Length: 337
Ligand SMILES: Nc1nc2c(ncn2[C@@H]2O[C@H](COP(=O)(O)OP(=O)(O)OP(=O)(O)O)[C@@H](O)[C@H]2O)c(=O)[nH]1
Ligand SMILES: [Mg+2]
Image 1 (cartoon, rainbow, N blue to C red):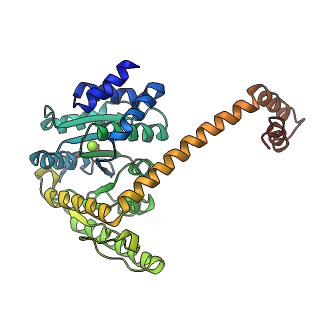
Image 2: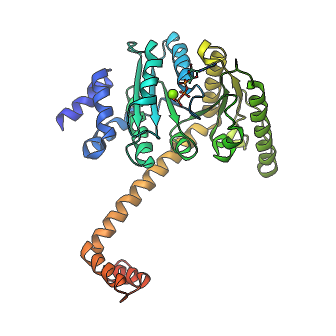
Image 3: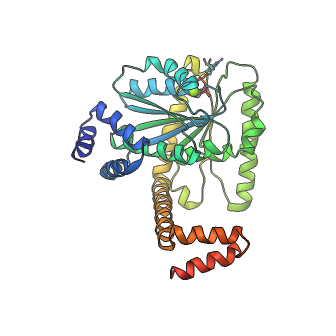
């Protein structure tokens, strides 16, 4: 236990090895992770968490790489988490990421961590959010989270981000699939990467059309939509952020300064509209709700007792009792209703 506390102190003092150790610790879950996260909690809440998501091969890692170079040029430290929900191994694509990001390696102001699925998506989303908490407490002002995958995995992991970039590229034929997967709904900023390729303008126009369509519906249901910009008390006034579309040629760094500016603009929008604190509250509520439910269920199952449950299962299977009656009886016997 003393060693764990020591680790947290070393992390707060800027020790990189303590950071790596703590990240492994929280990834492995368990009681030690709970204690470490609780010691870190008062030190978090400052980082701007930026999710970068999109279909495989659209250029997410290249975008992350170029953004990181710009942050580093301004002396801003960057934490990078590359999440691959489709891979049970940390090989393949993740190794590719590491190679692509090698110009960042060796810079003590950059910390890169790859994470792959170890079974269920829920577990990966939790582990990702815990690793974010460690990097946040370690004082990284910007944390970039790259997620590959389609649909639900993107949405799950985007919940942890303040600002979500959805990266598209021309010629993938996924313009329509993007809406289906609800990916557009999570986008704060749309990136049309590979703008050097044919069809980039078509992709941009298709996205713009979908955004306009979404706005029309929004106006019908909720009133006025204002364009992005130095938003006043936008969110609380029922005014929404309008996702900009940024065209980039990430391999040449083109359009990336504009993208970085859009990210900063979204950050200011979140702060000034009150959306940032609303989100922190919503996240706290969801986390507490989840933990309470987990603990309550375990607690109540213990009160019912596994023996009683086993007996009921046998009776249901033998058609001596139906499941509804059994459930009611178990609760009554345990004094729970
Ligand atoms: N022509 C062109 N190619 C690009 C551009 N950006 C990235 N690429 C190339 O596209 C390929 C995929 O880029 P990545 O950055 O690995 O894409 P990714 O979305 O991270 O890929 P996964 O993590 O595997 O889903 C690489 O060969 C890049 O060099 C661009 O702006 N233009
Ligand atoms: Mg990648």
